Image (cartoon, rainbow, N blue to C red):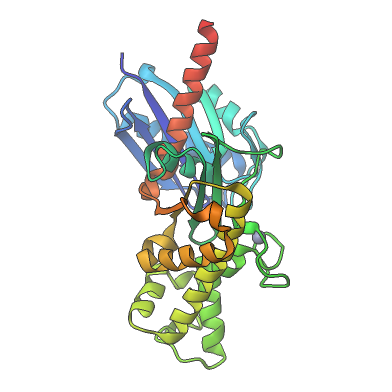
Amino acid sequence: MNSYVLGIDLGGTKIDAALFDESYNIVGRHRDKTEAWRCDEEVFQRIVGVASAAIKSAAVDPAQITAFGIGSPGPLDPDTGYIINTANLPFKNFPLGPRLSEEFQRRVVVHNDVDAGVYGEFRRGAASGAQNVLGVFIGTGIGGGLIINGGLYNGFSKNAGEVGHIVIKAGGPRCGCGNRGCMESLASRIAIARDIKKAIKRGARSKLARHAGKGKELLSSKDIKKAYDDGDQLVRKIVHRAARYLGIGLGSLVNVLGPEMIVLGGGVIEAMGEDFMARIDRAMRKIAFEFSATNLRVVKAQLGDDAGVIGAATLARESAQRAGADERT
Ligand SMILES: [Zn+2]
């Protein structure tokens, strides 16, 4: 009998659910807005709605769906499936895993959303075959996940891997987390956009000057990339500085973790491409010890926006298989 697993990627703006067959082909899918301004119960019902619609869109017998996996912003407890709290969702100590399990009568695993994405790249993407992987996603913010000795590493806190919040510059810009000088506050899209606008306001010349008075979300990775390719000196300087900060952070992490592969993904990496990655790579190798960096590969994520649903589904299937094996012994 065929078996299917559902992967859900829960974010502050959208919910994405995809149903996978045994070869990880997507056989059903549905996406909708999160509407995170609603209360916890209403957002939960929206998750249920997206999951149900994804299942309905596939021509499969729901009885053949063995497990659900969901990636959610944290902090959260992957052992109990509780969301502890998150900045962009209304959940506080919310039993997301148990509630979904009760609703659909299936095994449900809950993981950090970035961990799920990194796990997707580890099992079915750019890091297939590697055993020690550092995944870093650079977009609006900077998220990360760790694969150590072939498994997801969550640490004693169960919420390890927050690579965006290692402090690179004492007394640097204020980060969304409250600290100053985090990698995220120096090299995310928001940080790059902020620095470009600040310089324009101070009188620097730039092709992006017309954006300077608008909200920070209006300067997209694509806008930045276009100005960069057009030879905008201000934009090039700020992007190069961001690459250097990323290199400093990654080089330090390489010295601590000794990974065999770094997977880089997210909107900024997708938009800025090879030259930006090469700059990060060079800056990283100035900080990383030679014996740690010699055989280290820095690769681009392959799964794009699907990494989260693929990783969540893979984690769900593997958890169900382990549980099945335990029951047989
Ligand atoms: Zn931070």
